[in-house]
Image 1 (cartoon, rainbow, N blue to C red):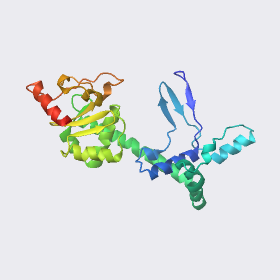
Image 2: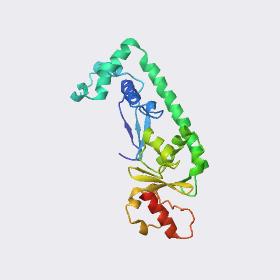
Image 3: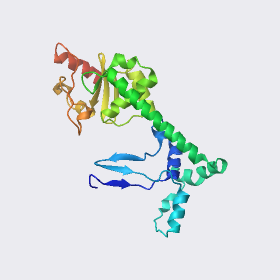
Length: 254
């Protein structure tokens, strides 16, 4: 696609209802319960979904009246898939009992989206308070001073800002409690690791830790944000010697 082009997708309101139900079953938070986004950036272009307020039945009636031709995916009838089970079994039962459920669920999705936006604003404020000299370092003391829900929220925001793969609620809980409070000084996830080192918390690119620790320059290590992004210089805590720092880091890595 060209930079100024936009990609339109035909997701409709029934697709949104299926998504909300599946995410509720899976225990999603405010972001997941915001549903399918109406638009998002896709590289240098934008992806748009202009039909999210229109029901499937209305779209099908229009297509038939205009004698449009479309392709049906036969796998859509297979209720072995969760989405198809929601579409053909669960949602018809819900509609039989609560005919206006689409409107009420859509309102809930809007409220969840607003809540998520507020959480992001709060996380940005908190990150500004706990940030250290590098994007990949935060103050452990200030992080632990936050209430648990607020701590999980800022951790999620911080890791996302570094390009880390999103952690689920359970792993955020483990990181926010066990690791930061001293039960474990190391947290390993896909593509990155989190270390508590003295009074700071560091995000490290896993590729850096695969190298011999004796060869790592503790004065300037690229953080996870350096992968495919601009280089982030990391200022490690001051020490009388690099050897002392290496010894502490090696103990954390073992």
